[in-house]
Length: 411
Image 1 (cartoon, one colour):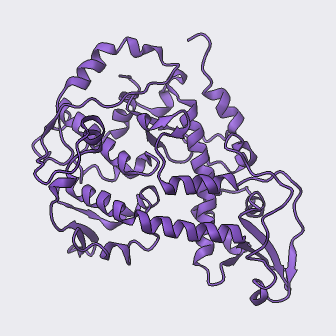
Image 2: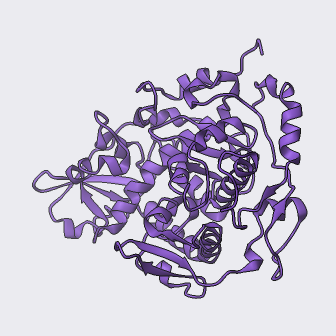
């Protein structure tokens, strides 16, 4: 559908401004969620700011950006105080703590569905097992709990078990094949097929949902090729693909089906492309996955923002918004709505004894202040925290992105 081989070579009329904005939102809230998770692990849910400076890679906050300024920008979620020695500490507001409790509840409720998705990943794999380290890459995108390695993986012995390879690598291994789960999300959506205990995966002839950028006019030139591609049968992601010839059209289309299925499992229908490439061998996919993503622009969209590229399932979005949002996505949007502050910086309180922090309402401090929370269309409030862009090492804020992906009047 397109001839681009590198994301950087892609013409501007193939870029989707709305999905670039969705990427920016994800990057902004991800930094905040990492900090909240770090604080949650602390005994009193507070941490010295100087310790956070050593965790810049985890937070994805490169120098010279200030940790303190980053915290200041979310006064509804974080608070700062000094102890009697002048050491600066960071903690969470009561509102942030309540949000973490709500997240724990939602993750527990979502756990059974995630167990199904992980089981289906094992069913798609060649040897019906996957390294735990690789599954860990999908933790946030799937909604897995933070302790999934030590606890969660043992809660579903009817579906999978942890095994250790001769070289001491931990794998998650399928216990029993479930034919009712060997039905793709596309089959369910297009054919209305539900779970079937007698289902046997084989050849599929389903068309993939397509959504091209409004500025991409060449789609009419490729109309015949697109139709031919859509009509071509392909092997189900759950069928054995070891007999397919690498590089063949059948091989590539089956790989597209696998990637479509994996993206369908995620909460936001997006993944970091690196995470997908880690599974090339296990899911029998080609070495150059990026070329497939770029070639099939109507099915996938690759955002080049940040240190890593992200791939979206285009049909799952209307503009910059997900069409169907699970409770955890709605929770994440709630956190995003509390990020951002344009008022004056509040005076940092000093406490004589950090053990009295809770009595002084440090952790339970009011989140009410004169600031205005960042709206979804005001991500520029923290644009200085953006990652370094891949390719040219440049730095763009939200205004530059607006110009970069603005539709051209001449097209």
